[in-house]
Image (cartoon, rainbow, N blue to C red; front, side):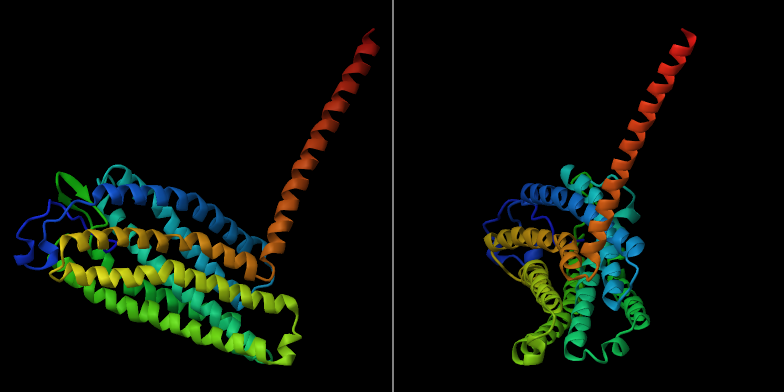
Amino acid sequence: MILTTDLNCTQNKNNSQVGPAVFRNCSNTDGYKYTVYSAMYCVIFPLALTSNCLALYVFCRLTRKRTPSTVFMINLSFSDLLFSLTLPFRITYFFRKGEWDFPDWLCRFCTFAFYTNLYASILFLTCLSVVRYVAVLHPINARNIFTIKKAICTSVAMWIFVILSSCPFFLSGTFERGGKLRCFEPKDQKSWGRILIMNYFALVLGFLFPFFTILCCYCRIIRRLTSSQRDLRKSKQSRRRSIYLIVLVFISFIFCFLPYHIQRTVHLHFKMSRADCSKLVLMEKAVVITICLAATNSCLNPLIYYFVGQTFRGNISNAFMETMNSKKFHRQSNSSFNLSTRRESGCSLKVKS
């Protein structure tokens, strides 16, 4: 479930005297939800799939020198790729106006993949920020503080934490409502109570703690880069990478993660309180937008690899040049072969005559 639900009926005049907002009869937002999700996921899917496949190819096949940052970027791109592979099922579901035609376990896995990707992205972006912090403030001891082995162990620990934290979403699968098999939607009042508890756990450990960590790291990095004459004379490339990382990670947090976590928390409190229907409908539509913003993170992360990775751009350029040279070589080989074939056929005709 993506912490949204249907507001299934028309508004009741006695709504102000009814219990929790979960049971309110409010106007239906299904049409809006299905249209926005379908359109956004159709844009996100090809971008996320191609960019993260390319990133993994560059990291795993073309990158010879591995660094702790490379390890975290590989994990980040793998997480984004895993999420992008579930998008066709979501697109199909929303195109069919909320009817699930796939196995129940796949519904559970798609929900699990969304939250796993969301919080894996946040944690691995935090790890990249810490690595940059160490490189700028402790350049002499940076290689000893963050080794490849430590980066791998940290990545394993992050995956274990994220997977265990996301396991409760496996509990919510498909259910029937309105003659359709539903997915990605809370089933009943008990589901909302459980979601509220999970929301605060994810909000504190999955968002606020990482956000304030990168905030502290970047404040120290900016202070060092602007106050020390020695750092001002540092290579432009190193300073540029630090600035790019700060800007891109902050864009991810402010644009993708912050609106979703704020809106999700506010929306859940509206659902559990005596709110008017007009506010509930507005909250419902806002949640749809913020979920789409959170999903766009899988397209933005490859920009970090391109601008921050030391060898990523060079490897992409080399791969492109090798591909172009290979095509040119094949064309030349085919031309030479055709020319030689014509000459041989011409010689054979002369001999016969």
